[in-house]
Image (tube, rainbow, N blue to C red; front, side):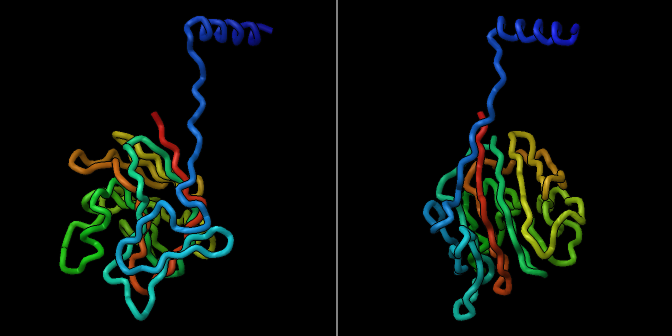
Length: 215
């Protein structure tokens, strides 16, 4: 009985102070599951949509996508959001998700341009289905935070959830926190979201790509 009374008093105090529980903002789909509306292809990768609302990135042998290809949102976002997506990557493959890359992989898609790639000018959450070492483990914030190993499902779909805050990037893989880093003051967290096709041999699939912008 006393617990109910206590909770009632607390609720009354909160109400009297004008405080209310904040409802998280809704998730917004970045990928409509039908076409590439709202996205920009960078490089020579072939990005297409197949049955089931699945986004596929791969290379055409006639026009190898060297050195990399990327797919970027046309929209840009601040440094206070949550990003969620599912991915499938072939065995031995490599991919990634870029955050804050205002150059939109300008240097990564031109072999004559040199550095920096999105992982060095902004941030890249690595996706890797090889042996995995150092920053190659899926969920690693490339060159900044090595992820916990053994969480990825190598022959199935995986869910990547990334929290981006002014002083934090935190990566969850299949519901487990695998890496986090405060970020570097010289690098931006605001900008578009990018999806990577790392090399001509890779095939990567994405679905359920959503963002939740926070105030």
